[in-house]
Image 1 (cartoon, rainbow, N blue to C red):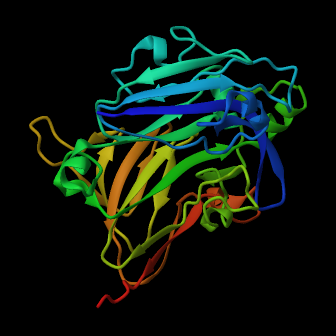
Image 2 (image 1 turned 90 degrees about the horizontal axis):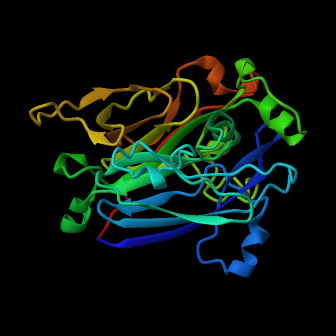
Length: 335
């Protein structure tokens, strides 16, 4: 068991889409290790997605959240929280639901504690005015790794040697309706019954930005890449997450995916039997996570995309949206 200590700031920022538009967001920024007298220099630098949280099962995790305020909306004094989405064992005080927990006012900090007891793929998000704050971008990935990794020195999704893999990639699905983002930036109310997204994102980006590298300088507040790269024959884990408000259907022609986990639980029956299954199309409901493994086929480029055509566009026009690539290379010779 180890101790994990992280420090996030809650603030705002702007993100870029491939059609040249920019959109106002709320979000989190990693300020771990930043001196206290410098943390407010990170106001206005929220990232989409929020920073990745990682821990091993049994670790004690302490996440301090500081509400840095919203320089784009200095009049707005919203509090913020961290909610551990999908953790059945979380104590209400640290679960981030304002009715039972503590939400953080502007200029204040609070340390959330949790001890994950089950490995898998999870989500963290703000639970204050969650419909608005999730859509505005206060969402992020959370990975809990199994103790089997430490025992055997290899990578596993769960404490099951059948879930071994060589590489992993995050496929984090969200939608963006530009209208509430525009109205929030301009101090106006949005009628959420009019929610009509026109941008569909993988890990905070729309294609072709999805295949650009991690921390691409043209996307300063969208640090995640969803380009999947592997060598022939490698086992690749795809961690699918959907924290949007719609169901999504992701397809990978030419590659079969073995679904080994769902909602951070291995695919096991009541008597422990293996109920994992093969698909080349994965259905992911809102709030759900899916762990799927494939063996990299012959060298080439394989598209991964949403099967709904309109979600493969940028604002209904050019090719974009929930599209990325799996690039498989020939393993280099070793002598």
